[in-house]
Image (cartoon, rainbow, N blue to C red):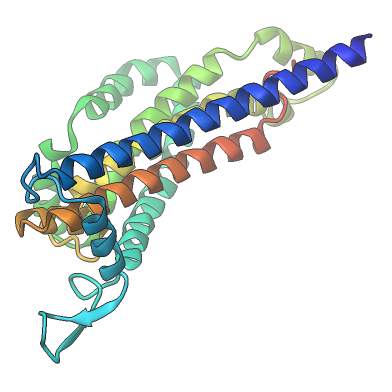
Length: 282
């Protein structure tokens, strides 16, 4: 009877998940249809809202070689001398470097602040201060310090990603049950063994949540980071196409940025399930 009930619950869960997916797909199709209808009826100036076909053509054009102007023999490839996928890859590389340093520094600093109370009282206000600052508030200072190259951009992404990881790590450690640590030590585990087998695994779900938030922050910050000398970069391409009134390409960039953000978030969720399979089963 119990097995039958479990199978029934799984079937109902599968049906519910399928229904939610269908609703999402229907919502997307409805949005595209409404978008097409509005542009086909010319209710909005194409400069402000181009048709879905124009956006699709801009996306295809940004990933192919084409004449620089209609009837010209001069061929250019992509936009701003790079294909759109190369712009996206450049932004992802900057995020990867900034996030890599932020994860290392954030987790280490979080463990230190959680372990040393007096240091926590001194440093934590500065961590919260940096977390609350909008990126555009200090990007000018980073450019003065590190120039307009990738160094200032990576620093900006690092500063956007590090604070949430620090806070998540501290919160995770503070939530570790002292009974678990004491039980491990009573069974003969040393301090290092208790940390590796009890403290760190218990903190890992919180750390992964912090990393997920940090990835979201860096992805929104990369657009600000690429406003100055950001080519190649998907954020810079979106900004420049907007200043050139190339609205179809701007919307195409926005769509690519959104899809990439969803993909990154899904990847982090999948990775979290892989490294913390015990969550929800305790």
